[in-house]
Length: 400
Image (cartoon, rainbow, N blue to C red; front, side):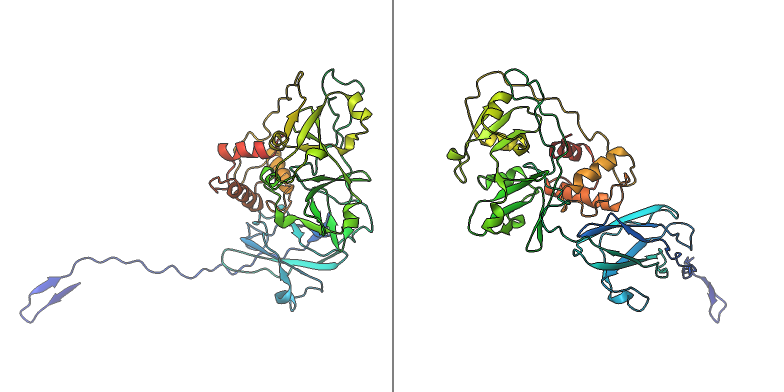
């Protein structure tokens, strides 16, 4: 600008620049309403929801977020606010993609209604989806299917059975067969494979194992055992009646993963907090002659095996079978493939790591959160990327 005084003298100001404000967003188109929400893979406490991803503007593009709600009464536009909001919903995929989400923490034998809305980056919210209705399974009266999970001391592992001709000088190499699991409901709390239990009148803690219609328990000799299996802890011990504990046959047989040898832990030497002695059972004849059962053998890790004092183990030691690394790739958000699915299946064995239990083979936000939880557990930088350090720990924690 210019200015002048009464004498006609001119003054010129310096140049000034400015930028006008961006006009408010003109995006007023909400994502289209999802019309095909369904529930499947229903258990006593969970259900897998499935639907097709909507778009950002109607059915075009990609929405920003989902809001999934459920309850024990029908969901409508007027009752939506009062319905229970789920947590950990997946990040929306591109319009037309198949979506899945595991709704967990439900009550057995209960009817639920579930629906969802989606939102775009401009804050536009879709109309209410269709409302899916389902009923969770009832708990078995006694026995029945449904046990799962559990790791470490033998939960969720294969059951060794002898081969017809044992290897000379060593416990016969077992032929893996999938163990059928069952569950027993006690005061409404199911006891599943891999659970740890304690009788109300005793301090001893046991790890549970099911093989077909047989139930086994193995004493955790001391608190050191929890250091060998970090996914277990005293807070997870389930209290049962002495009568219930007695329905589980006690096992003193172990075999370390990757080691063909089967050991008998001598109960006469077991002292709480101090350990026990172990004895290598070298032949199938010796094993069956002592009245042992192959289905009672627990698969443990090497740390627990070495916790026991070896007695009478002179003789050839079989070379552990070489195990190829299970995870070899760098995985991150957006990765796809079989190795991502293997990662999801491994994490699903521990509900604290991966409660969503989605096995899509796509590395999405739920898998990213699981990786960060795993990294936090082992003191690794929590970047959500399966890099060299995380991959090495995964191969150690979840061997092939």
